[in-house]
Image 1 (spheres, rainbow, N blue to C red):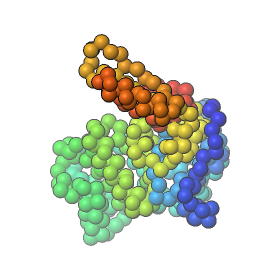
Image 2 (image 1 turned 120 degrees about the vertical axis):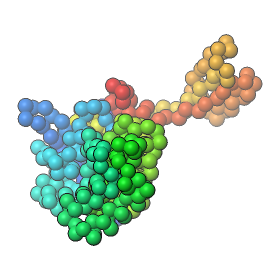
Image 3 (image 1 turned 30 degrees about the vertical axis):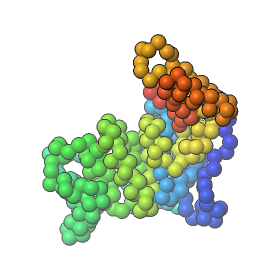
Image 4 (image 1 turned 45 degrees about the vertical axis):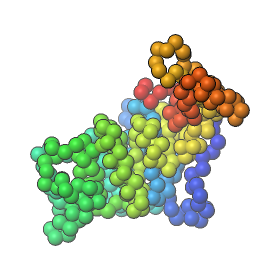
Length: 311
């Protein structure tokens, strides 16, 4: 495992402020399944209230196991986890009343409307009918679904269908929501609809913890990221801190403006501002396209886990 500096968990907060603002705290968390499969090993990290924490890792790395433990759906075999100040093992019902979960496999009923999904979820939660109607309207308006409230789910886009599922999770006004790959299978517009919703939730003070395989999603949304490999948390920190782990310099791609004109693309690594200026001057002189390529979160991921996200 790559040696990295200790991550800064409470960026911009004093110790006293940070102590009162922790939404999730995991200390030496482990999980071994019957049969001996060790899914998590000595995982420790914190998540601030009102933040988006993106959990990254290859398939089978332990992301979903970790979310299920924090969401009280699975018991750990070692360590301690607290959610919103409550131990998830000994205060299960208290935690469940404050959180919501959207599993990866969740899908709406195609022959049912957004209104029916959200309204009946309110009734299932025990709300009286007048309160359920008011809450359903509030949630649908928040999610931009009010104009679609009476349409069949089968007639809606993938992004709107995902909003229905998230809307059902929001009926109880959770303080923390767990999203397991919430944009998988969505087109670019659908993904950005969900991104916008996540940002809106955090503006209202909701903490969001999500898993994703999309590096651009994590870069766009995350206040902090955690990278899991073989059940171990190999990095926790900001996206910029993750990029710094790569120790990569700025790269510059210089290539022809028109393909097949006889010139070849070159990927250069300048060591000074003077060399960058020389590359730009060459591009202007030779009518070449110059593209700057700073280190990315994917570069950090590859260095930390020794492979690509597609693997």
